[in-house]
Image (cartoon, rainbow over all chains, first blue to last red):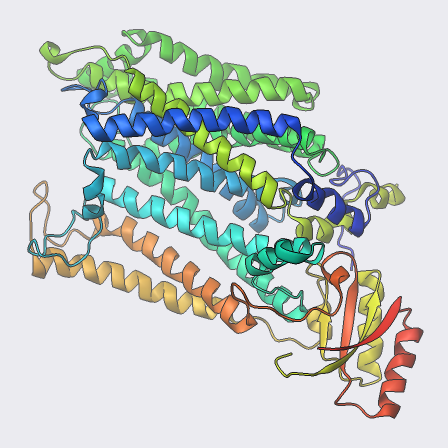
Length: 457
Length: 176
């Protein structure tokens, strides 16, 4: 029953694990007292979450006038952060859905945590449009429900409304996919525990038994959900890019946006997966499951998508020059050499130049380099969105309305606050759920465990 | 497993390959396996047990089609019949602009319907307590279970013999 595995494939599970050891290694972090490191990280995250709560209160109480948006720069940090977070979310779905369809076994080590990251990132992303509507208590107006105002319907032709549907569908489907994967692993946790803990995990596991028929259906369901999530994830960032591309603003109104945004999303998402995984594998001692092989594979994806993004930047410049349209040409001249030139430099350095280091295998397999690079990419992709949004709006058609933009403390507070929200959720997740998909790792042990692959050569 | 006071005779195996050959032998001896439990999906068990391919994808297709037509027809009705408005000089019926939401609702309906159907047909829901034969089945043991009530004493002995012949690590009887 063992499938054909190339002898050049590196093992994906190290340490000569048995099935029981896999259960033990992955479940035990949820069963013992959290380490001091965890408490420190949690305290810091909670502090940032407090900053978020206060900034939200300030924004809602005083209105979005407390932000530094003005007449021409109507979008800035808020939408930058929104796109940044949504993009980060994409890696989780890519790993769990697209790599499942491509039968990539290395996904099993990282898919659970990456999907959790997706869900938390989308939750963070959702905060910005909700707050930016101003009167958050009227936010339900965006849903097309029969109302007493006519009924007055929403504008189905608007990309902003498409975004509402895309993001909420994405969050729902990601949650369903993630939770269905978690159910058998919650059952494993349940069967290791007693008393109240057992009752809680039985509730979470929906009474899973491990019956062969259930597994067969579970696999069928996972495969179809992956098939649905794959076009979904591509559609989500396509629609996010439509927010810009369907407008008539020079620099935004381009057909290159959808593929360029999707590549950038995968790029930034993988960087965030690396940041999280490198810390998680160390703190939870999961180096045998999240191996250098996984890290190297993800670095290859970062290299490819980073280079695609680089090609897109240059294509944009070429197309602007080639268009012969002065407004388009000015928009790009301004992007590179205008008042926000420093963000363009940051973007180019972090996203295009620095990932080229991963052409060297030694660098791809160096944990320290990978960690630093993952932070670079996260910063660079934030700059990319800022470049697209703020520089374009700061120099529009009418020179008399040109202005410069700097954020207020409220906007900065909201941004670092969502980092707090994200890490608080992630740290809680590492306490209550297995961060590596137990059942899926067991199913690849015989083909990818190191003790089995040594036998072949 | 819905009946009360059911007596189950089950054997635990240590490895999925041993389990597979045991199921094969059980098939040859025409033993009536009630259930097989494994800690992870073992490919090939479903064929040995004669399971038909899951029909979940049909549910997905039907509800996807419903979501697709619901979204498209609803937007068409709103913009051509209920409250026609011209946006940006485009026709009332601007079909290309309806595609993104139509696609999203197709995926949403199909996914939710399949997941709900999956849990419903498996009899799994929050708070459901299914009796477990052994706590190690979700860890590292592979289990073949027989309904002890449905077999005579003689047949049960034959099953126990089968377990020892196929290298089951442990054999137990449990009332659930």
